[in-house]
Amino acid sequence: MVTFSMGIRHGFGLFNLLITSANGWGRETFALQNLIWGAVQPITGALADRYGALKIMIAGGGLYALGLVGMAISTDALSFSLAGGLLIGLAQTATTYSVVYGILGRNVATKKRVWAMGIAAAAGSFGQFLMIPVEQGFLSSFGANDALLMLALMASLMIPIAFMLRESKVSNSQQANDQTIKQALKEAVGNPSFRLLTLGYFVCGFQVVFIAVHLAPYLKDLSKIYPDVGAPAVATTALALIGLFNIFGTYSAGILGQRFPKRYLLSGIYILRSVAIMAFVWLPLSPTSTYIFAAIMGFLWLSTIPLTNAIVAQIFGVKYLIMLSGLVFFSHQLGSFCGAYFGGYLFDRTGSYLIVWNIAIALGVFAFFVNLPVKERAIHRAALA
Image (tube, rainbow, N blue to C red):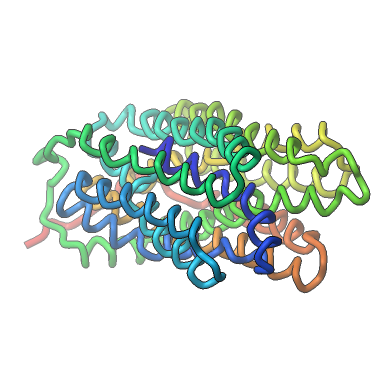
């Protein structure tokens, strides 16, 4: 499920310049999806916690396919944004990490939880590696509209995949109290560590989605100065390398998260991202430097996801894990929206991505400090009446 869902969306950056240039739309057209995904994720999570993930995932697979079809047949920016933003944004709330991690959190032993989450993240990373050359091949052979229709057929495979899910009932030990959704939300929002994780996750979303959506246009723009980087194969290879090294990065995060404090690993990931971005932007650009940057960023790409979700489960337990993971993920997607939107908006206003690259660097330093005070221990609850 995660392989298809994350893999297909990872290639949207290849469509950005092609579709927006052909239709005269702004490069921020792809931003709405991230905002919808984040805003609705806590609601989808609460429904999955209450009624089980199967129905949620089936609906998500259907919406994903419909959204891609809508993108293919849209003739104006509004309908394109509704299809790619609203429908696919809703679909991703039901087919990506928050729902899957909730299932894992309730069905995997505590000592193996972060490892299992790392495995699931690696599956999503494999999808990113797999789908980039597939989507580029569709684009080159059939054009953007037909490529989107073919992706819709692939997305529809998530529906039969959902039926393979067999989620066992939550044990009584995991349902140790009768906490309500309202109480769980109040508890999480009032917890300082949860708020710090939320702030750090905003930075994660900003950085990765800005790069995913705008790296290809950035390379194309700079081909006037560095001709070698303008070939479509460079951007395609770079995005594929992100997906490839992401497999190793997320799996490593799952392994290391069992042995070391997860907050320190998160801080290290964010500061290393800033260093990598700084070197990429400020040093001379070439295909080789682009590939090195992509490999480093790929290793750090989604490594934050198993660590962040494991901390949430560690602090609050697993009864409302999908909803609480969705709540902190909303911050991630708010950052994703800002990265996608302001990347395009500031480029349209200034003719350069430099301002946004520097913002991404500064935010990484901010996230380094924000994650250090997080406390990784289970919250103490008084017995509920």
